[in-house]
Image (cartoon, rainbow, N blue to C red; front, top):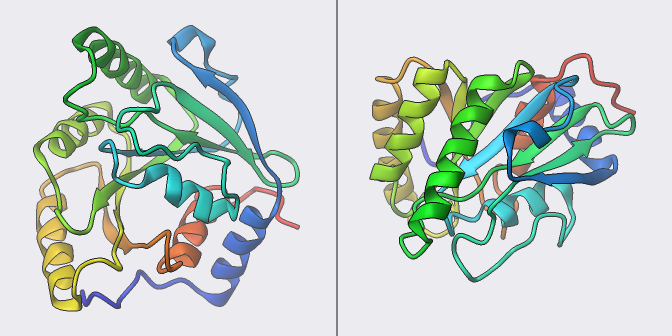
Length: 222
């Protein structure tokens, strides 16, 4: 797979993704305990990644909103499962998961986040896929592997999304994509297609929107 390649989507699929994300995106609630989760009654996608991987920036780019997801220069700032709805009929949940791997976070907080994430992954019937964000400059790290193992054990489908893909040179990005692909092939719950994105340039954003829309085929997109 070349650095400029992206998984193929038809013009209709791209248009569906654009329409879904042009509709209102509404913050529902932040959840710190499993019993506070909203009703499991609609298709759901989640975004996970290491602290400072660019998760909030990517969510804001997807929704064309500058402040939907809070962007912070302080790693480990997202400490809740933040639920948003997508679509005119609020028919899809988008979940911003707590960033992991922040070394300075208190150990009790890390244990709490880990337990919350594990319970969430195992208990959500309508969770269609987790988009696992990986920094294109660094590839998969040890704490990414821990999360991948957890999703494998929970039988939750996940797909790698490279962030900050405008930063490396084309040859470097190609090498990272190849290496990530080789590692993902060893994981039973990993979706094989890798998306390379940049919140700054818009690279891969239409394709990621289409990937989300494809997971909610019965959503009402106007």
